[in-house]
Length: 475
Figure 1: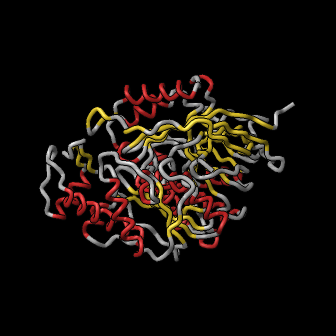
Figure 2 (figure 1 turned 135 degrees about the horizontal axis):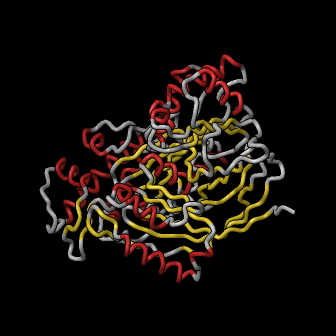
Figure 3 (figure 1 turned 45 degrees about the horizontal axis):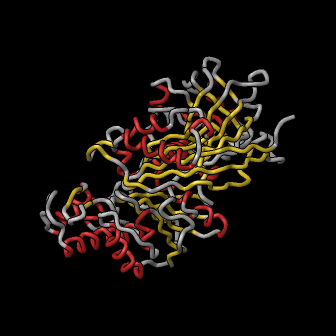
């Protein structure tokens, strides 16, 4: 008899520009009785341990200290009374400036030693914006209220913004404004100056070096400049020379009026009245941002989660079975593991090859991915009607969108919510040069930010077991 409930112990690890921490959770998964794919959903989550928040250990400005970080995490496991082998699922995310460190990918590998269980990623600036909006609770609030909310997560090295409309993240952006761009020792001497802070100092005509004492007036002016840039960016677009220099990505694309703003991240703890001093510029930056809040055109609301917004609760396993109308190149080998799901927003009323190509390009950019470098799953909800002319147009658009994937023999995985995968796969093979390395699946309900493992096909190679590892946040 198949089980209708599963309990999982999960761990989430966040290695950020300023701080690192972890969370252990207990998840209750239940089978959806309405689901044809027998997918499990998360019925309940209980946070059973919130770890200590430490300064992210560095060997030097370019390198994360793997040994100290690993030792800290092992200590947290002991404090929680949890053995590594007892953890069934989890996620490791490296964010902010830390994701740029020389050994960031080594950290991902070291902390997620079981790739079958752990979602693991060095998050680029746009993806970090998505994580923060989900983890802070802003996306869920937007879904429940139907409002358009702007999430702004202010970390150590960057501020990551996302606009959520009716629960869908429609735009992301990032600017180099953070509380750890300058760090001082107990005597007020400068120990760290990141490049964005140097640009602010140059703009202010300051010539401060490592080892110099940071005068209170200079600290005040630097914080004020960073706060002004942040308010300019979230009001959009960035127009001042300094703001343009500090932009990490493109500007936000505003879909209309913003109903409310929400701040998360370590600096947000101070924005909403919390205490803390990490020998950096976080506290004065929070004060200056608060001074400029009246410039915003909508109210500021407090999110459910602030400093822990990007702590990932789990990579929650849920087994789905694809629909029986997929298409597979027989030369593909399985399982295929840890594939990021990237949503592509094709509008059927605007159907054309340029439109589809543009939306696929935008989807790659949103996830800081370059087409043709690694396997991804492009997820379409309802892109075309099941008519030959439309499917043929869609097939040619797929070919035009993925030239490097085709050239590099990277498996192309297309997933659809509706029942169309077989038609799409057959038409692509018949009408385009894309003859191999193609897998199309349907009747899967996925979410952007999921990772999936695809197992060997079942039932005369008609259906595929898909393990969905959703990023689960505080709720």
